Image 1 (cartoon, rainbow, N blue to C red):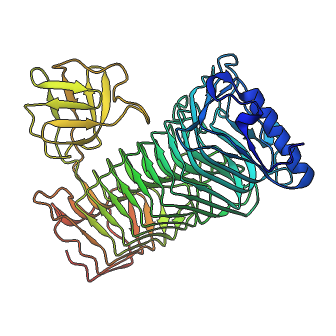
Image 2: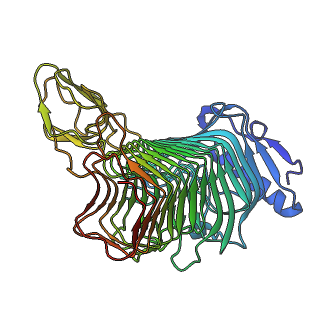
Image 3: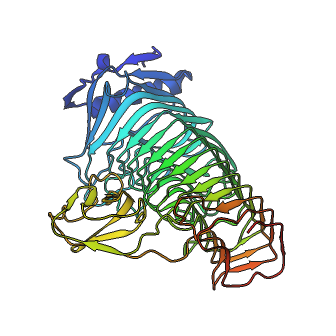
Length: 537
């Protein structure tokens, strides 16, 4: 039995030369340390000096009480590969309920993983395998995961579930979910399953960065629809960029998201929906003090939740469709969301409507927001080709064009048989979104040649600050400024109720709806009941 509490991996058989398969020696050492901890109750630390440690063809089963400490990102590198086992996922460490009987009474306790890198680029399975992660442990008690760099894994980078009294801090995850089409389970940068410990899981995710991951940058997912929704979870000071979704709440209760940035994600910066395993959306959450900017589609997408939910004091700007979108996915909860609160947010410069309700809400509060200068996708149809037109991996330039800045944001440009999404534009150049998270090109079939013919579709005629295309009842609209002060106004109306929308028994008081391009209001369905007073039109 190893009696020393701290062990040097190099002194116990690991080569770290990038050539030797260190996995067998690594597994033996973890087993010895775990057995020693089980025997005397004293946790052990495995220190891994600088080097490249090849983990080939087999994952390492982790043991309780064993911590793994490296010499720093880029110094201590674990390289995962499976050339001899193409059907086998190879996470650096795993311990799961299905494979190993993990549970509250059989957990991994008192461990720290810190200061190393996991390179998953060498793992390629015959079919997508959700367990092809960087780290894949379940039921962790009193854990700390700190200063890790995890990249290019086939599935989720940090894919650990049921983390009690645990801190996840300072983790950088890039280009994880390589083999995920975007529609499969996992494939995230940081994906944390919740609910295994019961009603409360005390977990903090802080100062983490997720870039270009296949599905979510950071997401929480209730793992069983029959479990109670889990509270006690905080995400703070994190950055999610270029993922399919930035940060997602798929089944938490009272998730607190603060001081985070969600930028350039493909579907939404922040998402609440039923896309998770349990098909249950989060509720009771609070998003505050965040910047949700420049996402290819929507800033915030919220649906499949009975409510409540609150967004306070955020900047929701420059997104390619809606700033805030209330909607429900098929197959999930579609009852009216109750007590949704949008308060003191700066919702501006989004491509279409600033706020759009496509699903039913009741008792919402839309209070003291600045919903300004939206409808930026105001440019008409355009086309061109021939001299002056050229494409790169992430752009299309037409030297003869004179487009309004960002007037085509969020449109699909068609070039030959290919299409790409416009992230933004100048007078002569379209900046294009990558074809999928983590990709380095917008094109699926190669960069179009010089002079290629392109087409851009027209815009939609009505682009409101607040658009209602669902059933909105007993809602307060108070103290908002909903207008447009650009030299060329693009937000056509302050408040719109569409032919299929309902605005019933609502109170609208003390709002400034002046300065929109066409008019303050557009009631294609007349409001029913409620109060309309002291609004500046």
